[in-house]
Image (cartoon, rainbow, N blue to C red; front, side, top):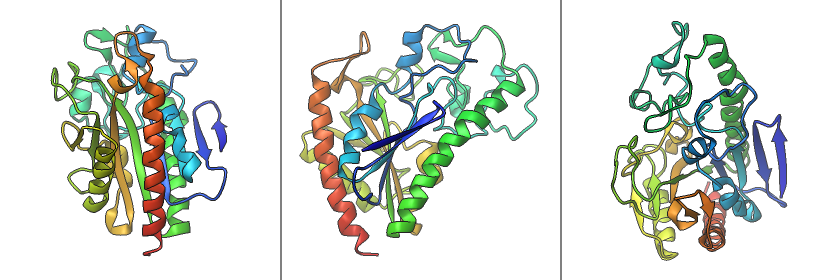
Length: 288
């Protein structure tokens, strides 16, 4: 495989051989703090609100012809999986001069720019200026989204179809800032906006394959898919996007955030899943 790191902001990993109509992205696994990220939150809290090691777990898919795009900056700095207009006015020192339509995420302090790293753990002791928010959007948010767009477009143009997995992790129980606070979660959650971002037949195949591998799987609850799958998923145009959430307890000690012995086993299972998905993509690409 070949990894191209773009200005320390994201990387694109391509397969050693010919690429297939399969693109994965990991928007929340970055841990490289930009120089202007003057947060007051503990580093551990910032890492915990991201998706630790998800890019590493899913890199096995590139061995089967997939392309992987992953952020290097932390989710708390700016979140590529939020709409650009989902901006929290409580974070700004002055009126935002562009489109601002705060959604439920911003109301909980976890919108485009996070106000909290964890419940009652603020990220800043000040409000952000318009100029620094604009810089984060221009230098980090848009380049990541454009890289993912380019990878999806290239696959679609080559094959006439593209399957996109937006890869995440989730706590074993819903956190205080989550819609399912305190509730136990499955091993894998598959989300497609109730069939709006991918052909439901593909989503059913994904769930069936994870089930075959021994995972407990849920569909669209508690998450129905973030902005990336809603933005890029257009099943009528043969562009299928699903969001995949892996339960962190499968591979992390949630009390300290360190990998445990389950990491290698999970990565091996994801390799099996990726091999089956590559075969699925090859078969259905031929149907175009």
